[in-house]
Length: 357
Image 1: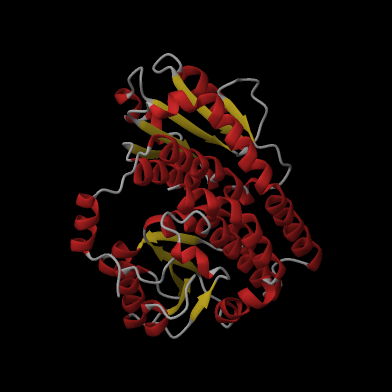
Image 2: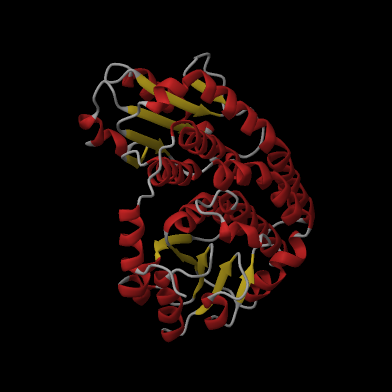
């Protein structure tokens, strides 16, 4: 498991730097496709971690491009939501380019006359063969990762860079604003190794508790919601922990009634506007469980809180805030030999045929 996951976490900063250094040429095709018309918004159809990636990038894309970005599960788009997105630019994204649901979403968008692009990591995949406008986000290795550890930061970075370059092309931001955004993203990339080391240190303090986790809930809001989604998914699909994510306020409307003393709650706290509320919730949760962990942009003076201290716009922080969950999942599996993959889940997934050949 460590070879699959932790090594990918180690390599991700270099992969991100390479994408950043070549961002203009990597995003050029998608920028041209988007800028050829004045669309009323963007729709992103995706599944699994690719859906979480889109949720992580959504708020940065909306802010920079000054347009709506709607993220929809690929099968929902293909079967139901396709009727309501006229004059939208549709992006279908899949890490490995093999998702059958995302392929169906692409075909449905084309049937409806939408302009649609595919964003994937690997060339020569079924999606690239079918989709006329297919763009690689610059890291072919990411599509081969079993649990998308390189794929999330590199894909989110690609979408952020696409938004910056497209907004500049459309004259929605000035060159000065473009350079400011790029400088912030460079700070994020430069911080990735430090966050991995912080995550390792935090894991060493709490690993005995992590080994015994029985039920996990992860909460976040805004861009942090995408992180919460991916964090819950990583802990679930790798080590097999029962895990769910919740938007921070919706978490209070029902899910809290399930919490027992031995349940584990992770709070993603990266948004200035919701920090006080995150603190309030984390403190109150100690009445319900002994295991409350906060991944925060802010200094909370608590042994249960891990601070990722970087003065950049929170819309760019998902690249960093997902790293702790990747580290925790990979190291739990490595230390305990836990795995969510069994012969039974493998056979089940083969029968479900979620990947095209």
